[in-house]
Length: 281
Image (tube, rainbow, N blue to C red; front, side):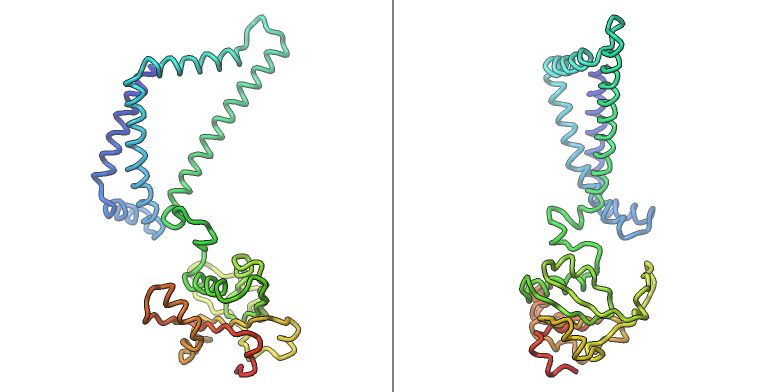
């Protein structure tokens, strides 16, 4: 019975590996997009296909190795099974307490195996889903769940300011995530009352009301006592097209980041030390 299981697994894994290498990445992505209709499904399909291309041959090789040395494999499995039964056997001659104890041990082991299997399946699912984004990189490197422009600004601030900087932000976005990714820097933003309790909805065009730097008084800025002031606007109502390239350090950084000497951002980013605010608009 056990040998038949290994033979069946070997054949199934070999067929699955062959199919995974015959099916092209484009075919898998087209099927996933036709079925689910989302961009995420394309990434999932690609990651799953490569997982099968690597995992299925590995399972087939393991089963083939076990069948080739079947005597040793069968003896090892039989020894493991016998030891498990001996440890958890409930004999009729055993006392009531011992029978309960061994029954509890069996239940705990069975529960542990079920939980381990469930966690493995969920972990594999998450790895497949997140592999195209994370691969072997950390969350601090990937900066997930945000736009590409947000990532660029975070990386710029990380490179252009010291760790202990206090940064005052004027923006049409709620930039609470800056405090997380730029810690131990301190981020301050004056929220406009019309956007204070606005809950963004997925796929919904929205423009949050915001304060420009010119809307903040000298007393407002002095009370915060920042080291730097960041102006970051993306909304059509706030972007100033004639000032897109005003911050030369930002432009040089983002062009190097994108490896494009002619790259021109479509949103305003201006970072200035507090000492340069004498010329602010």
